[in-house]
Length: 293
Length: 287
Image 1 (cartoon, each protein chain N blue to C red):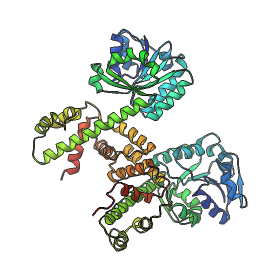
Image 2: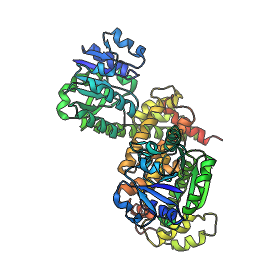
Image 3: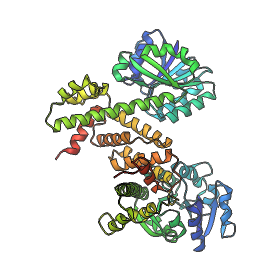
């Protein structure tokens, strides 16, 4: 298949390379030319604009930072809509506001281009190991066409519903992981300040109802005091901003997510945004009595 | 002075009346012509477009609801604005949007002043608004005749956008305090104690505040008809929380209050008074 790929960063680069390895021809455009260097010796063609990518591809995948970037790549001057033939499928794997995704989808549909939102969970490691969790919103027909591509990048691929539904699922994922990271950090800080070994607490709780993947994975990294990303705190702040914008728009009460979003504001504001989101533990330590008990 | 004015809501209409009474020559436009009839009846000139309003005006005022509305009006008036003119915006909008408009106007030699107000409909009617403005300091003497006609105080906070930062702080303190009053009322009610007496006792002490006086009063008498429509406070919280995220400033209490406002909107009280935060607590606690 001729696959366009735009957004060749930490996540996008390994994802695109998996598709090439599976025998697909890549069609690439990058804002920064140096992003194209890793593709010099593989089956990939490069272009001067997203429109040219769209003209040569059956499917174009975008993996960029936020809604305005997706909007610009899709609908800006020389964007995908300017070059895409009717029947083109654009798959956005970025994490953006669900409402923005629906709006972009509608405007692409007016040009006969189908839009699928397919945000991912699993971070850079998941991208490198082709083990991403992919949450998809779009029509069943479009989903079936692009599913073989998803299966080369992820190990869990789910069609959640219509346009925007993938982003809704991702927002739910970010509520659970954001609030979850805070909960584990609070529990570990509570244990340590009470003079109890947090590692033992984790081990005991893994078998009970408080078990979670966050307790297991993020919790272990907190114990190792390994704050290297992983998933950067500023990105979690951005994702929670999306969650809170949607809560505001629809009139939803999300008190725990709101409190967690403020902790991430503090983390980013105090210059810890480049750390993994488990740096939340360091925020709590800074705000707690050093030698309590 | 020749002054343009666009936006004749609860706030804008009495402000226009005060400006005409102070002897200024007003040029007006509104999307629905009828909204400006009162001003024309008082002697204002009706214009066919925002650009036409701006023609020959030293100051063009806007007073509308959303950031996008102000940005739209700013773009529309630009062809009519003379170099050296001032666009004076009384709306409550995002500081970042205010700065963007200021930069765009500056290219044509036009000044933008953000001058959000506090004091509500009553303050507008009595010309007792508290005005917090951002813009070049040198503009102060030219703005003074307008400010003195509609308000009782005008404080320059800083450059363009700074007025909106001050307004965001104002809204946060006010609504956080309304929520605190609602929680006090809920606690008193749950304990079977008369909140109107609690309020009366507290007004003289260190727990007293304007919020307790005005909004606490409405809670005590269960008068939820809008003084201030809660949906406007809800809108303001989106602006200030977005700014907090952009700046990396943690606002934990405001974030919690924001969620109570979301629930208030969900329960259908957006067009009623923000004292309805008491009813949000009662709904959550009801068996």
